[in-house]
Image 1 (cartoon, helix red, strand yellow):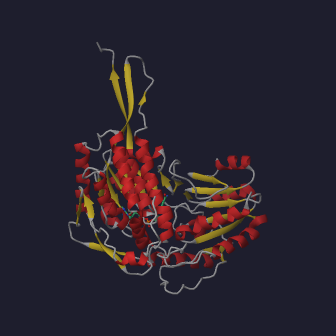
Image 2: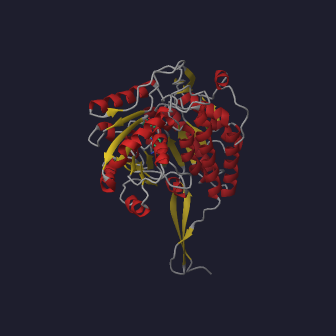
Image 3: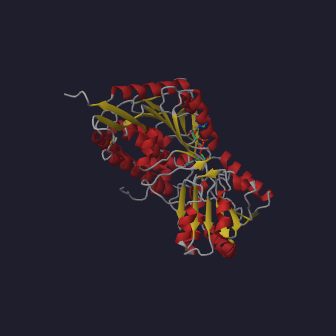
Length: 502
Ligand code: NAD
């Protein structure tokens, strides 16, 4: 990725003219109804854009365009090497526009521009390049049948795949879904969150420029219960790839059951435990990781280590160090390149998070961080400072429910057994962290932590090579890695009888 001299982000934001219409069949179009919704910059409270509010009629148009493109076969039947070339071109185009896309991400979400530049855009581009590179290296299988039979197990695209994604990492999450789906030869309809549609909408133009045939990628902005629901109920959508809340994930399974039994993969909520035992090998690293593992992206991270389980002998010292690190994370203007902690996604979400903090206090938790005053020049409505609640227990709703904000619940535990029991006592099962110098104990413990991901002596790391997803209310299916192709392909068996071959 190339970097130009430090831009004036405020000046750029003032002259921004983002694409706001749906992208269907290779063209930008208004919603059939002509309706729009506003995207609000949470840092200013002002509208950034008026975006097409698509409904069921537009969802049908998008699915029809996707289906027609799939049937035409220009993409589905292209060789993997041809698809790879187009997707790599798209990655280059995203790279060339990474500053513009990062700005859209920050204006929509309030995340610091430095994070959009250093985390969101690089991860998006890496993801696309990885799946583009993977697709011409995948082989199908031949089954070990009797000699007069050739039984081929092919990985076949499904047809039209719909991706419905949230607002916390808009472009990264969208790419995590659409890159494997496109690489495998499917046509895609992407529905971004109504809170953060702008970066996804820009993808349409870049995809066309990269040479993706019309209709292969369609982008449908709209309100979840309208555009999203219509997609999920559509009989010509073969698979639904979802990241978002558990509540909506459950609805989607219902929509699949009510319609065509489309396959559904769900990356939903989390309440991940981060266990630090008395023999933690490097306390400073563990403290840094515990803080950033919950406060990065203003705590709006599905796999955040939101429950910190501290072994009794190190509880007080660890907390003291943690508070020192937390104090360095001061909310600031998201467009200032120095800012490390921005605003939450919306005033309404910040109000919900503040309500959770109040609930925690009423349940007996102890607040250790100050409610820092709003820095000059910032409006307070969408700000919630990093918040540490001590003396929490799994009996408290604040420790059971996903808050999806910068709130850390600290619990005291007594050794590994107690920690594992408390970590597993959660309706969610996305991830868990374990810090100990005893690697044998850690390896035995990972087997008993009922989550999709376990970190040992680290937290919230991973890359595109490693599957990501959860169990229990955190969902089903895996994103990233070659296993992501399981969500967007079927194993098609072809049994060829050779006994009559001349
Ligand atoms: P959300 O569930 O409210 O919305 C997600 C998407 O679903 C949006 O595009 C929304 O428009 C759409 N939607 C809403 N109602 C719908 C309906 N009835 N039918 C179809 N689509 C509908 O989630 P959010 O608030 O955007 O995101 C936060 C949630 O996402 C948190 O719970 C978080 O844990 C989860 N998340 C999970 C992961 C993961 O990988 N496990 C990653 C990021 C976020």
